[in-house]
Amino acid sequence: MIVQAKNHRQVLLQRLTPDDYGKLVEYLQQLGPDTLKRFGPHAFGMQAVLECFQNPENSAYVALDAETFRIIAYSIIKTGYLEHDRERLQSYGLVLDKLTDCTFAPSVADSWQSMGIGNSLFGFVLLELKARGIQRIILWGGVQCDNEKAVNYYRRNGFTTLGQFVYNGLNYDMILDIG
Ligand SMILES: CC(C)(COP(=O)(O)OP(=O)(O)OC[C@H]1O[C@@H](n2cnc3c(N)ncnc32)[C@H](O)[C@@H]1OP(=O)(O)O)[C@@H](O)C(=O)NCCC(=O)NCCS
Image (cartoon, rainbow, N blue to C red; front, side, top):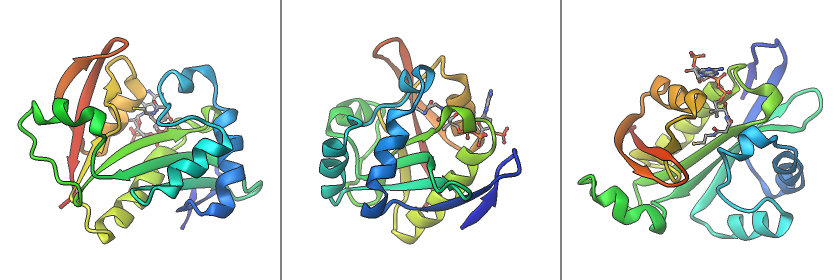
């Protein structure tokens, strides 16, 4: 799918394939400190990327600058939930489902943030997840309450807050029903 960013550049949205792993490592390694404070679902070297996507529970979607073909945004999806988050999520009364829940972590390159890429890629991911039979999207390790951009982004896309927890500051657990 092709969309236009707010800077009028054309952007391609697609599922990540093994051909993109090198570009993904380049993308991850150029993220700036503000984004790195907020986003780190796995380590950023090639070995970590290979191990991550050898696991069939993990998949990802990317946005590429149509001029340079460089990755400018990356969202990772895990089918089910993180074992590490299970007890906390259940403490809200959530009945988790390994097949129809998924766990989501989005990122956009620093110089492309606030240009509509996050919203566009999320719309694309949503269509794919619905086609895969996913019914709920849970945040990967929650979102830091002081991450205003991300909290706005999740609320704007319909996520609601399940509860909050302390880990390196205060965080919200959020969820979106897409069933
Ligand atoms: C959070 C993030 C994925 C959003 O993607 P984005 O491309 O920057 O966002 P978009 O331009 O598509 O805007 C989406 C929504 O985010 C919010 N938003 C975006 N920029 C914002 C800003 N500067 N200030 C406040 N809210 C902002 C708005 O609600 C916006 O919706 P609207 O434009 O329809 O009002 C991206 O900013 C990012 O990667 N941040 C760093 C990493 C991160 O925090 N990841 C999430 C970890 S939980």
